[in-house]
Image 1 (tube, rainbow, N blue to C red):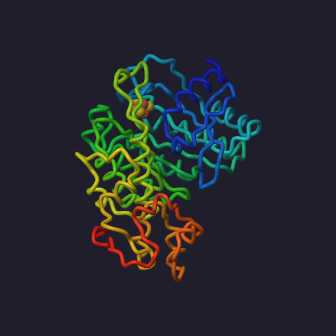
Image 2: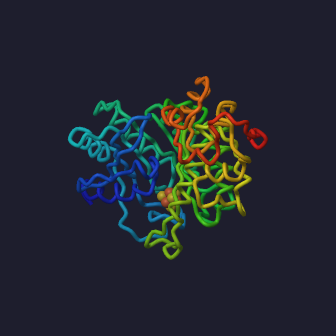
Image 3: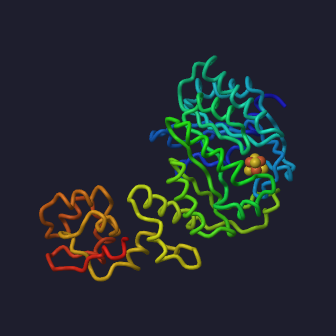
Length: 362
Ligand code: SF4
């Protein structure tokens, strides 16, 4: 197989790994595939996303690159991958590399090839842009450290919210040793753009399982982002006849993730809307407000923590409201950035005394 054929096979195989929320992943038609618009270091960045190899010795049931699957297999030599990337960088305005791989035999052997490819890109082709390096389960500390010196961001795919869910999907990965231990090592290395991970959302795990693990990863391992991938059956895999997870589930989990990271919501607040461990099928902030607000909130008396729990009011607007001496009209609130139709059922702005909502926050 020549380098161009490998590039097509391996960039197509790389599409299943998340490098950002689905909304950022716009595939660019270039005859080769693998080029995505993603957010890297908070900037929009055209990334080349590829695998080093798609010939996996592992048996993850959802994965088209697993040992079960009969798809065309290919592996780059480090020099080949570096020259494909250099071509895309010079000619197609690609400013980042997202490099992952199947575990073809020994994870350290594959990781050495990945490191060598990035070394050529950095040292021979003098590329100073963004590199996201996917760490394979079971990789040694020494190689993870070497890769960290060449990369801006690293990740290990956690895939599942706990050991028992992972064991339903793969017999080859040890959740604690192959994944969590490697994440802890990466965390200690303090990379510039930190560490992310990807979790598959499927029918075996509840939203509560997923959010509990996500919360733990943010707090204990200081992950920058967790990407949720709703399960989609892939033809040719043992799970090809399973139903896909609805997109809305992925989107509600992203909403909760955002509320916890950016608004400071506590995980336990969501207990009041979970049903058998699952979020309701509506915007989680609205669901929480409907479940917990009693009466209307006096917008002129409310604290920041109360205001950001009103649908249609975000942190920026809440800060502006606190700074404003008195709000007497909805138009005033609209000018401060409030979304009136969403906020109206939960607030009063005409000066009436309202019931406070702080009881359910703590
Ligand atoms: S380790 Fe599992 S998910 Fe990763 S490429 Fe191999 S089979 Fe696929």
